Image 1 (cartoon, rainbow, N blue to C red):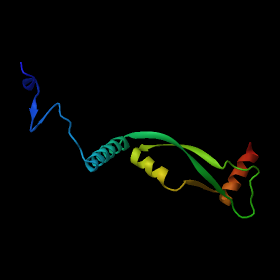
Image 2: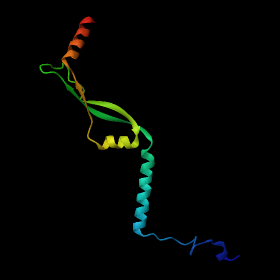
Image 3: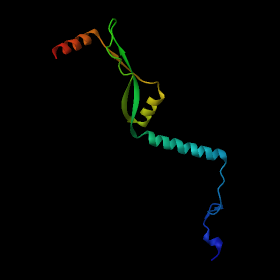
Image 4: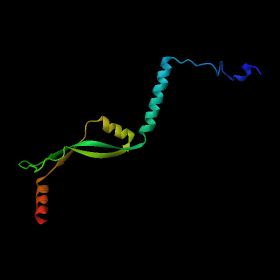
Length: 113
């Protein structure tokens, strides 16, 4: 058999020949592959933990006996797009507003026990 018969011909190139790509075509191909990879992976569900700042707002003239925790570790579950948005947005804060009615309820419960 002849060596030429063993090589399959595709168009005008043989399988043994290299295909030369321009740098632009190479970068566009890699960019499209990365975008497709991100899209596929960010549509899945993920669970992650985030530290959230805690702010306690008391009525005027009231104070806490002990300093509360400054941060609260929270577990977030959602699609990759949602979690990416949570990471890229501002640091979340959790505000606790304590009303005078809450204080009187807490104090009444402490007196009963």
